[in-house]
Amino acid sequence: MAYNPAAYEARRRGYMEDYAATGAMNAYTQFLSQQRGQRDLANMYNQYNKAAPQVVAGYGRRGLNSANVKSGAFNTGLQDFATERVANTAQAQQSLDQQNAGYDLSNRQLGARYQSGLADLEAEKAQQIQQDAQDLMKVRAGY
Amino acid sequence: MAQGGTADHPNTRSTGVKTSPIYPSKNPVVATNSGPSTTGVTQPPMQQSGFNINPNASVGQTIRASDVYGANNYTTPWADAKAAAKAISDAALGQPSAFQSGVSGVGSSGSGTATPNWHMATIAEDKRQFDLTTQMNQAKFDAEQAQTAQGRADAQAKYKALQDYYNSGNWKSGYDQLNNIATDQYNTGVQGVQGTYDRAQANLGAGYDMAQGITDQGYSALQNYLQQNPNNAYAGLQQQVQPVVNPMEQFLGAYGVSNQPVQAQVAAEQLAGQQGAGAFNSLADILNRTAQQSNNSRMAEMQMGQTMANSGLGAQRANYQAQNAQAQAQALAQLQQQLSGQQFGIQQNQMQAGQDIYNQILAASGNYGSDGSNGAGAGAGNGAPVVPNITPEMLQALMARRGM
Image 1 (spheres, helix red, strand yellow):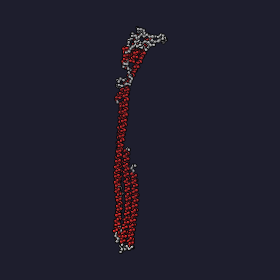
Image 2 (image 1 turned 90 degrees about the vertical axis):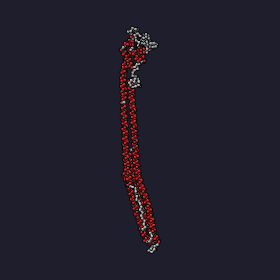
Image 3 (image 1 turned 45 degrees about the horizontal axis):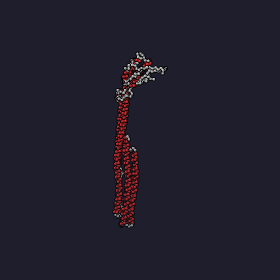
Image 4 (image 1 turned 30 degrees about the vertical axis):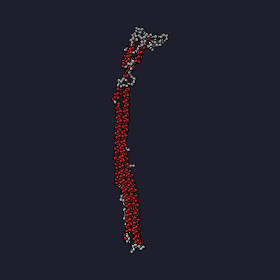
């Protein structure tokens, strides 16, 4: 097969379109995941913010927390609440970050595949040129 | 019935006894022969050379006997035979009296015993026949001589022409020209083969240079692309760790609750986040380095491909050069073989032509004698001699028979 730059350009265009489509889908998915994660995290914060006064009020109704009473149970309960909030919100944030990292990785993989495809295409072009050069020499030699 | 002669010399011919046609048995006519009479007759010298004359034979019988004897027993060289024949012919034509004088002793005018007329008539008839025979032989001889002399002259001229042509070597000129033509054809063929070889080599060299240039261009383009577009998709890929805080620290402080236990959880979550990000970053780093290795591998592949391409082109050029050289050698060998075959054929034809001329010379040399005087050398001649074989003894006998 003789060297045909148009054929290689068509293949390069195919690689680019594939990379663009998959990359766009990955970016959109990442966007949705980020949105969803951030929303969940925000909801979590809101819930914890709303729950904190209710927790204090509950210990107050049971007489475990007042202006003159500072029970150990109230202290422990309030520390547990704060600890759980830290753990849940931090883990949710980390999960969201890891999801984003996964999408970033996928995007980088798509880019790597695209670049590798283009490099393979250029290598094929060089090899085809080499083969055509050999055939040309053969023709010039009269064989 | 035969009479006459002796026991030593039987006479088979009639001795003159004739039978009458009317009375063959009763009245025979007998010619008396009383033996040879020497009266008035000169004895021929044949007797001295071995020819014995029958004394009981008649003169005519004696002459015939001498003819027979001479024809059977004598040979002479041609020149002598010619002279002898001429002398005999002259004697026979110019001196007929010699015969008459030879028989005068028995003729009617002699003083001896009378001879019957029929006997004289027989002698005259013999003489006349002898004269005719001699004249015819002479004419035949002269004609043969003339023809033979002309033939010898023609043959000598032909021989000389063939010999001159052969010695001049002109008959070789055509073959020399053919040989030169064959050599020129060979030289032209060699030049053509050399030209073809040179053109093939030049085309091959030009094709190689062009192929090498195109190949270098192709791989240079690949090299530029790889250098300008490295596959570094994982470069800079890192997961950032969000700092973990305790949003209820002030809230706890407001109720007099210690934040210390919550801080421990904050630290634990921060560490877990950092560990997770670290793992991801390690993965990204591995992928990044793999991509760099891949880039290096591609560059090496490009360089190996270029090297292999140039090596392949060089090997292919060497192969084509070898094939060209082999084709040249085969063509030259074929030309050489063709020239050898042509030269062999030319030389063979030349040798055959020379042999044909030589055979013609040999054939021509045999047409005018075999004594080697014509220069053709021994062995020349075609068998039957042209000159009659007459010995001196035969000539002497003939001359003696004529009384010379």
